[in-house]
Image (cartoon, helix red, strand yellow):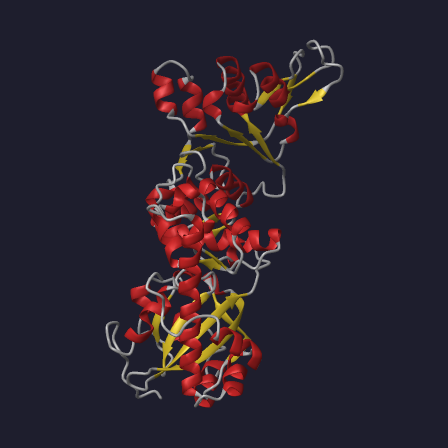
Length: 457
């Protein structure tokens, strides 16, 4: 088995499955197609992310090396090839960043090429749900931030560098890019992680209410102040305070914030007694504070105090390769919360999501996937399940789009089943056992579609 010649990326042994595999690109699980010597011939985006490498770096590489695992030598993968039968859900483990081990389950189905008889293995790697601290997450996930794009990786590195210091941080970026998630990561990575993280949306409150919310007030300070109130700078003592939409605060609040930043003290509304506070200040804005300073709408001295370390979150349109990873994370939560077994998106749906410009960024994508998850009737989100503005259907109504997606999947399922059935000499019982399903289920799937795709599929 070790002396077999590895086919290159463009050889005939790959072509019979090319269209089939294309439909599996949007699956949430890591899928690998292996040659008979267990070298990688193809991998979907989730598999590339799990392996922590580019697709070109994975091709023709032994899977034992790519996953850095001690559980694949003389493993279920060899067993599946040697005994010519499927293995399902076998526990294993592999290494992730910083030498930590991650539990997985392996499923492998032997496939024989119709053209040249070459044997290969379609392998599913299901990553067990983590209970992890941030160090056990894959390289593309940092706390609740998700992305393997170089801009995101640079952001993670800068957060790790800045978090242990007391320096004020200004988070910049368009709405929906994840500034609050970055603030949480900064707090979690800091020595103040055991203390409170207090969030204030500065744009949601009028000036008088925001002043009371930030600094508190004494009884009788103003009409309606029937009791003493503790402000956020007091409750956040020893922790972190996150001021979202800082560009919307009034000149009065800017002046009071400057005193807190400079002197670490403030006064409650209606009181002259100074109160000391020890907080780490993180601010966020989707506005250009530099322009607001130039226009006289924001204090220059406060601006430079807030942006000791500026961090910018990139818009989603600049890192569209992260879309499959984000979808995977959203579906893992939504399928659980909604009680629906949605596992991935179809090729056409993924193409539509990649085409969109995402003015609302990651938040807009999350809402689109939630919309699609609610509408989806199966395990795979189709183009018709997406919000209408994302479909780009060119005149096709939703029912027709749904039929097209469903038709492609049924034809794919039938082609794979017929291939396995031929390899087993027409023995339905053996084929059903290989797939881990009953003979009746196999028969129903074979009857679900015509042998050839319809002209409209």
